[in-house]
Image (tube, rainbow, N blue to C red; front, side, top):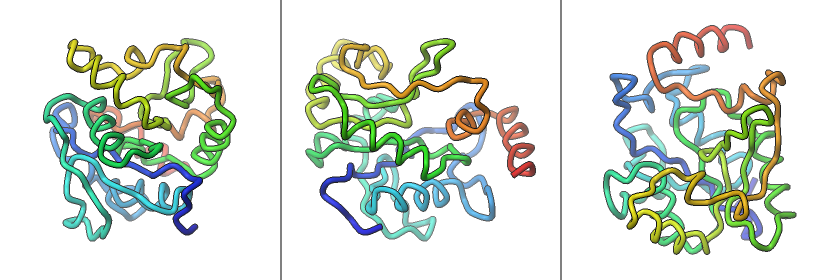
Length: 203
């Protein structure tokens, strides 16, 4: 897919320290690729253009723009603020640790974003059973930068709290729908990696 102004900009958050994993998650190999490369390819298939937030992707052989965090150590919310403030565009933001992310999930997200209510600044997926919001597979509108800056200054870093329900558009899914839920499985720790290897072998 070629770059399209009607599409959000694809953004990968890759500035984390991987402290729970004990090694750099972005270099973990899934389906024959470093995880950062796999996520970048999946995102590019849907958005047509991708930016990496938090690190230079060139050591991975990726030739794409990147941005250092505007303010370090603010977590994912700081990365989202960085890209919204720098680009002034709607951004489809994903974390770099999603080995089973797929184009169909991202296409559903973009379709929901195009039909979002006027007040929505965050378009995302929500688990029916728990209300948990997938804030790292979400589209953020550029007007959200001011909201992020205000809450981060007040010490709030949790994206689902910074963007409460009134500012969100949701796609609901059930944890019992394993095909849907698999896309959001993230590899944060060694036990997660063990589970992910079993899931990879089963595909």
